[in-house]
Image 1 (cartoon, rainbow, N blue to C red):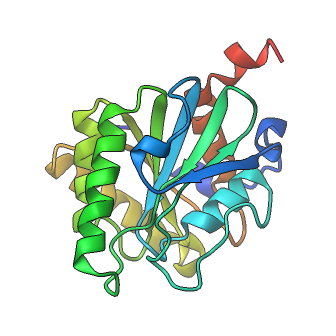
Image 2 (image 1 turned 30 degrees about the vertical axis):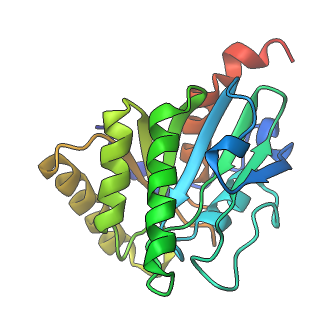
Length: 219
């Protein structure tokens, strides 16, 4: 398990131009509507109100790329944003919101599980968790599905600016310990969309999954 701690509080403006090229390419409400299973995909997932849309916008540097729903938990779409013809970011529906009907929750859960287990082009899962409330029940379920599918997972502990530095670091260490207790594999970092701290680390992980240097040489 990779522990990314000390780098959070450095702020470096460097970012691959690739992610600034992101553009919306389509949505699906069920797996049968997904685009052809080729190239490289990285999925973004998280509980409603965990800051997923803000993280996507911060990482790409495009302020309104992923829209924040005014009714958390109601967004049922799987949204695709391409960077080029080979690489795509997949914005999965938010989960865990109390006001969503139980039948709808179950449908989303089945869809998410099957997507993680069967999508051949999926290279990694980036999970957003509020640093103040990490590793809720369905977060653990998502991690379990990803581990069963032998899928690499990277966790962004979002809204880290809401805590003092020492408290944020302590939360990260607790998450690492709990992952170990549950025998779950994932790398972890602190992240803030507000001040962009941790963005470069997240971008490095995307570069790894998208094989930017290898594939990018042909661009």
